[in-house]
Length: 142
Image (tube, rainbow, N blue to C red):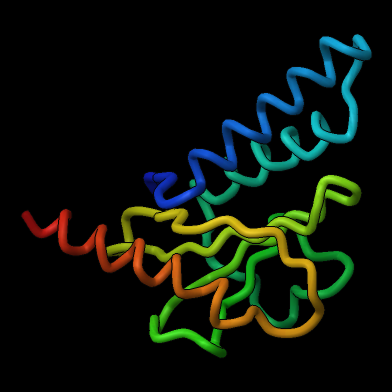
């Protein structure tokens, strides 16, 4: 079963920014640069989300885990099943996308941010995702 992956919140802006930076890199250098590598990683991992948006079982985690890097967010959230997708873009940033699996059919990418700190995701980075999902639920029920 394929899930319908939808970009909401600031995710479409992140995608535009990422793909524009990758395109400029190609135009300037004639080859894939750091932004192109990050965009390529994003595209490949987003395709994986269409078929498997859940985090791997505990026994499959670690250095050998197959991307994307998905973990459930337990702290600092009011949503029961909030997940984070991590993309290590090296020099382009430590990108995080927060998402939910809505009605076991859709993966809703709610919010992107560059995680510049260590430890659990902080509440200020989660609030936009929760608000986006609340708005989606209100509009989806109409």
